[in-house]
Amino acid sequence: MIDYHLAQLNIAKMKFDIDSPELADFVARLEDVNALADASPGFVWRLQTDTGDATAIDFFGTDTLVNMSVWQNIESLHDYVYRSNHKEVLARRKEWFERMQEAYSVLWWIPAGSIPTLEEAAQRLEQLQNRGPSATAFTFKQMFPPQ
Image: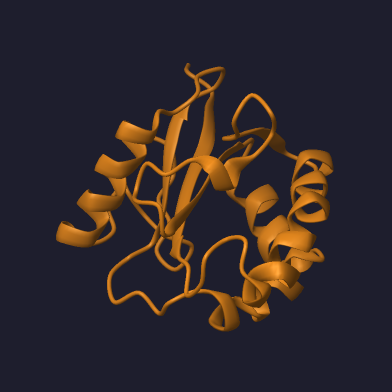
């Protein structure tokens, strides 16, 4: 039997440049929020550059921030997102990011020990946007077990 981990991607279109005064409070919180994720139960991996900077990844465009990570299970990710200090940053997202009309976050299962690529993540997000939740691209609101 194959063991699975949960991969997640979320993107956010910035209202301002990353080095603007308007985003300064968000940027100032990034190190703490990332350290919190890294130390959270169930955390496996997160996307970042060699210098530890995920804001420098412009796969979806220079105005779009990317967050991609892997967790042991849905509960661990859910607890980090909604039950830790991360929720304080989440509550302020409207100050810093555009309201997106289509899906901007997607979850999917991967074999334990593997790391998703940005290309794979983009395909999963597009699948969710075009077809809605399924066993291969879903959300917290409509989850699916590993196949």
